[in-house]
Amino acid sequence: MGGVQTITSRLMRAADGALATPAYSFGTEPNTGMFRVGREHNGLFCGGTQRGQFDTTGMTVTGILNATGT
Image 1 (cartoon, rainbow, N blue to C red):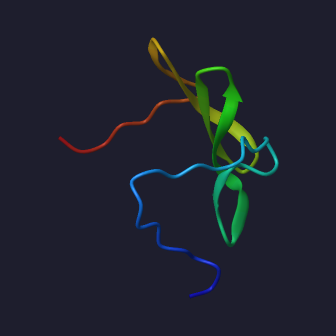
Image 2 (image 1 turned 120 degrees about the vertical axis):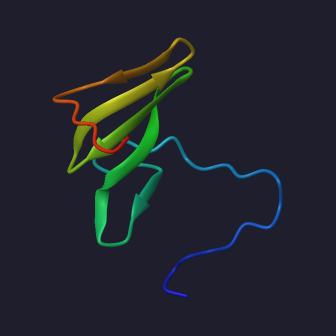
């Protein structure tokens, strides 16, 4: 299945990752995904640039926020 694994347990853990190598990424875009920025902080990255961050208080968006739909 091209390196994709199905997790059947209720618990999944991954390495912390880094900016250029997020813990969760895509096969054709390895620098786009999510990784642990710091204690209780998760970052969302696109093309190696941080675009959002989740922490215990909510989400911070970096850059221009465009929303579409209803």
